[in-house]
Image (tube, rainbow, N blue to C red):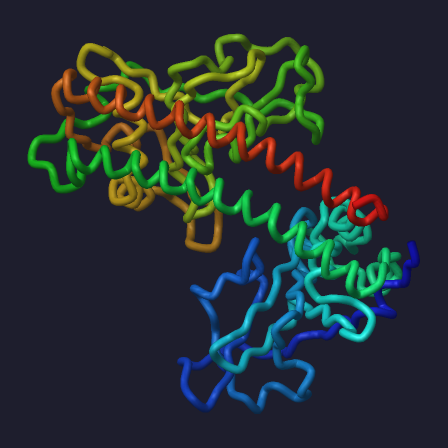
Length: 398
């Protein structure tokens, strides 16, 4: 298969520079401005700034359908992340921490370029090119432009892009089904218990918990623990409010303190994180062995499970309004890491419904979790299929 350098089939375009004072309310006389925050799996248009049209100095700095918006200054694991630019309702530009990759339509199909550039293989290469400064990695445009792009005829590019688009559509539908099941769990809670912050009768956690435990943060390798190794949980193990036992780092040396091993039935609480992510709560339904609590995650020990069960405790603390109340107890400024002490967490008050009602909730949620697990397994199969299709597509085997 023929190939070409990326810089010969597409152009990188730098964004506009502006100051916070330049940001305006959206109107018919200005333009939207996309930035790093908007670069998600799809273009996120929920939080878009607007700038005076005069800030856009060149016509090529206006976004066009089929552009790739690329994060060019970000944490090392996100630099190079890209999303497709669909048809936009308003004239739009992009800021200085993102770049646009614009295909030369005579030689490369836009969707083909998008699928190649966002493939795992290419994204890994791009991240390895990053120029690290403190915690920020900068996209190396020159080295990235030098990457070799497989270049079959345009009709073949369109065929490959269509196959990958269809496979990705199946993955998206499965993710939507999982998101719907998450909403179903919240609906079950509301139907049984309502808004916990509006309840009349509440009990402080100090009367419901026997203890709040925290682990340690020993020296770890920057890699996951092997199955026969001990690992220490990362904050990301609980950030999504569902326990993820793949998020851990390998313990380097020293005898593990087995008192801090994570066990099924544990309710884990992130005591320290950014203001938006602190106070995440996850229930350990199952886990691999040899995982330890770090000092940034609490384990909430229920005093009497004849009064309070883990499934309900996790759900009530994870309720958006209840969580917001807990986040309000955190110390630290809005721009720094927030921290919630054991003493403050113990003051949190929650309603405690009958054990029968809690168990009814747990039974219904367990049924939803079984269905979610089936969807996750199917999604994993679709992910593997998509990765295989990508590999074959860009090696001339599809």
